Image (cartoon, helix red, strand yellow):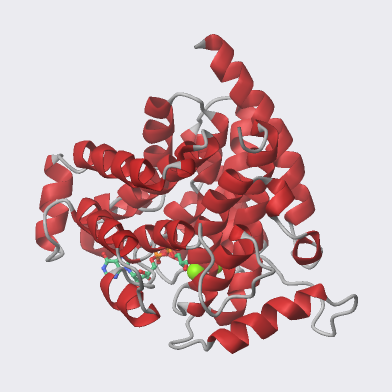
Amino acid sequence: GGPALLSRFRGALVGAVLGDCVGGEFEGAEEVPLERVLQHLSALEREERGEGILQYSDDTAMTRCVVQSLLTRGVFDQQDLARRFAEEYRSAPGRGYGSGVVQVLQKLASPRLSDVFQPARAQFGGRGSFGNGGAMRSAPFALAFSDPAQVKKYSRLGAMLTHYCSLGYNGAVLQALAVHLALQGALEVPQAFINSLISEMEDIEAEDQAFSDARALNEPEFPFCTRLRRVKEFMERSSVSIEEVTSELGNGIAALHSVPTAIFCVLHCLEPQPGLPDCYGGFERTVAYCLALGGDTDTIACMAGAIAGAHYGIEAVPPAWQRWCEGAEEAEVWAEHLHQLYLRSLQRG
Ligand code: R7I
Ligand code: MG
Ligand code: MG
């Protein structure tokens, strides 16, 4: 049942790009009235837009590097991916990158660099970044590899090129796993979906590095599991306010404060929500809800857009919205190529 696999692939990548482009409007805003979100989205329905197209940011720029590296190499190649990140940054430095990651991207451009993980390891006093920059670009790993062990392994390594802290790269693994499960139709049973993610993260966070990072950053042990359990509590309640979501799950630039939040947005919007137009389907609800949280809206909408797109398929992504998003058309092409790579990885077993 549900959308065809190729439709889910298209939905995931177009959903990610669209979330980034549409969410950019409110990035960094502390409070975003729902009315402003709905105005912003309804402006996309118009034939003409004085504001022109919505440009993508670093989220899509780096996702694009991951896609092109996987497609060109046919395998995960950290040297190639590092080179693409550096080249993308050099050619378009104004895409809104995080203030720390810029140093890594500059160092990755050096032809003398032998260990491509060294610049990321040197960030923030040697602990590495816990930002969500690894997670925002991790959807393609779920599309290139059918085996969950490979999804986990390569989403982690792909994130480590810039985010060497476990709270950074484990966020990327969580996001890739959420997309992986959504592609299989796992969101048909929301409770089972969240339980699978919790049990995966219980394994992933049972690691010395994760314990020591959590301690150093004053987080509880199993930080992602802790937040995912809160997502589960919110799912069981009849109503949850925006303030509760932003204060308990977060809407910030740390992976820990945004990946579980994006997952919650998708789960919450599986059903109609008060304040959102009746004519909205689940995909539109998810994007609108992400924007209404404020904070890191482009990234939360990008991650939720990928998961929701994988669940609902491309048919659920409004063409009128896609039309105004830079890179949305290209994302359809990537999806087709990644789908072929995925089918080949399935055949190899
Ligand atoms: O994670 P990153 O690539 O940024 C992604 C975000 C997304 O919202 C994009 O849309 C874009 O706007 O930026 O970039 P980093 O610079 O690695 O991390 C982001 C920020 O998190 C840093 O600039 C710091 O403010 C903060 N941060 C830390 N602060 C203290 N200690 C990340 N890691 C640390 C840390 O260990
Ligand atoms: Mg961005
Ligand atoms: Mg952002």
